[in-house]
Length: 282
Image (cartoon, helix red, strand yellow):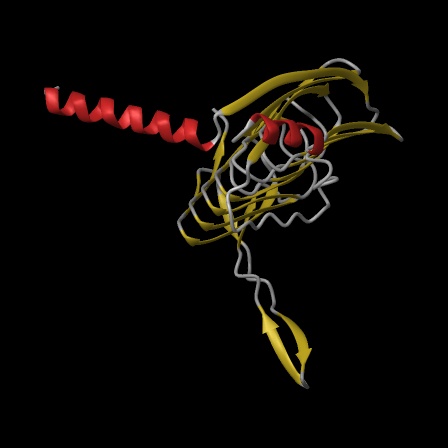
């Protein structure tokens, strides 16, 4: 590499470091750990941060949460630490782990995060949770965090906005949807109930075990549909009529339907800008 190239690379590194430091020069990190009990459901909710869930053959829920506060000043960091809350609740066989609980008290709460100016601080909660195998999961994050689930067997309901979703070695059924990011699911046991995978801007990659029997509903606007299963095309669904101002308005599903094996649970795959791949495990 020439001296000029080296000099430009070094200058870029310095500029990047200075800009990063000037944005939020105060950074505080801490990890909060607890062991809880849940008989049926674990819900993890945060606005900024990642979520990682791992199943195991036990009966406790082991929680480690890394909280990172970034701020322009020490005073702003103190204020953020005092006001942006982390809550861990146990009730009726369910556990709620809530980052930003004061702003988003659960996954079914609609969060409005529009800002006109850069805030004086940011707080992120990164969750690393170990759960019993059959625990039902309700997971959601919004900004820049990945959701990862490994080796669980319970039902799942997962929402992300700006980040990917990755499911590995799972044995349950459910829904995984994001806006900006890819969705990848690898089943160690084929789902026994209806499931859905969706991304607006990202690919969908789903791997099933051989011997799959299911009905696949697949749709993409800018992308392709791929599978290595032997499939049979199903008839298009009949459009449903709605009455508006005395007129019948018909809406079609626009999904392409395929039967795998003898048919079975409905697996819906919906990508707007992305490819959809459904493949057999090797």
